[in-house]
Length: 388
Image (cartoon, rainbow, N blue to C red; front, side, top):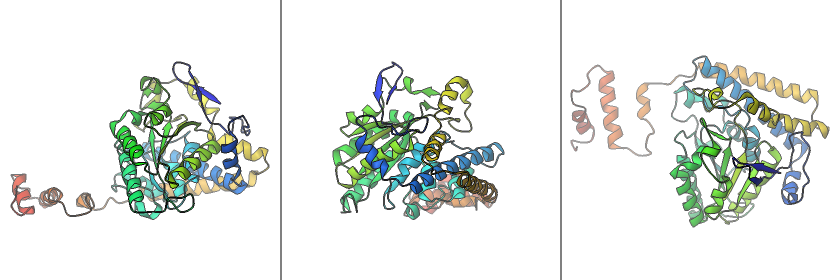
């Protein structure tokens, strides 16, 4: 398969499942087809289930924000295959660094649906303990977490974790096309390649950095940025869950063997808004959206499963019931969330005591008590032992 950029340049793109749900057997895909062939019918049904549940989560979260229950939300509709397919290639000990849109990845990692929305409701700094599922909390600062991911991967490397296809730990970080323009992402790729860190850079190119199309961000295909830093790089059809799985599995195994980082560009489309504060009708057409609606990743996998007699109406109904139950639980759980005492904002900012945070906390406590100091520095000096 080839795709094009703004100059109509043909770009090689890995595809194993076409938009009609038919397996692709073109030349040059055999190694990836062999990887996808290891997925059982139960695996594929599991992928279908997680994609459907991710979309239901997405729809419910969007509705909750419209009802005033969330401060903001970043939809992921249309990107389910990129997220679920890559997450299925992970092993439990691998570590995930998401941005703020990887709801499908967190679905596969088993993170509670309500916990995923604590941050968007403003009731918690993050929402869950990263070490319970080996998945970091959402990162809103564009591209910052790419450096965190590489730092963690370098730590794995230096801690002596076995780096082989069976026992090694790999790291994966997700970001969007707009983030590739950020210095943090480029610096992360420098560190990763120079140190041969066991990390996979997973770019979800949904073609829109808020309202700016990819053609306004780059003159070359984005996967080539990975090549420029000296790492194996590949563009994959991001709406093809099989191709995403195979490409990610290969990259993760390379990382576990100590062969360094890889770069994957999953070419997909953001069907919804950038966030719930965005209006995509102002910068794209309904005709364009309809083209991508016909490439829906869930419909594509469902077509394959039905053609191979592995999906029946009973299973579809069962998944729908699970989605309905998810919606009920999510609505009730989010509305019941309590942000706790406002002063808890100062908890867990740093792993160890920090003078500036202590002074700000002391000032806020005085303010809450109705006795704010005339000079904030006066209470800061007290909290820090008199040292300004």
